[in-house]
Image: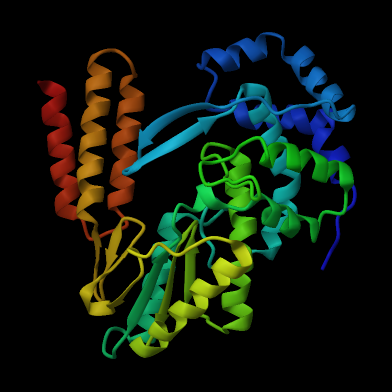
Length: 349
């Protein structure tokens, strides 16, 4: 295992902080807090650098709000200065940990994503079932309240295996311990804030322990994970049934998290495997009904925003193309036409 000892100086360097700023601001330049930070950009960046260098930096408080995507999620938003630091940390840590991740982990990684995950699932299902002609089953699991129950001590112990830089660990402790969820106790600090760029990386680092267990200890090849959702494909239903207890025990004992009791299921391939918004069947791929409804609802909301002058026509048309792109990954020609027709109808009303 390769060890890294000079991470802190790379993270806090002025060059890395300015690079982090450029990445952070790319799609946020119209935000008032971003504009205020940019007004005295050099002063703010160099002050952040000095605070980090002198180790007097303290992570600020979070602003909390809810989104529906599609289920309700609580987002915790840090101030601009802290979010720039998250990018700076990501710039240095991601190249260290990315090579350790398995190829079938698809969340928040370059050249991965939901569509690649569904493509690989379909490929594995077809292989195991010999193109749909033999029995094939999929065990699908979800981790209960994953981001809220990540154990800070465990996460830091995993990071310390590779990062042997006490100053970098000090900084990572400051970021990780800046947030605690309702599941924290006086004995265990828990929770990663949904909204931090670093939380996405920390989630992959944390669950890579499970990925490696599945791959190297259980010797399972047909395994796919996206954040806290994962699927295992096999010919025999009994094999999958027998894995559940082993999986439950590992994530409980080693990672201090739990399987969601209502989201553990085994289905036949020909029944359809529901994963990342799509229903995968032997000879086609359908859009989940909830996903379809959400797409129509969100696009009509964008039409209303355009009519009120809140967004430009270009932005509106980009939204349409984005949703048509989602539909292009399923057998959804009819739905695509229905979406376009409703879009133009609503636009002319």
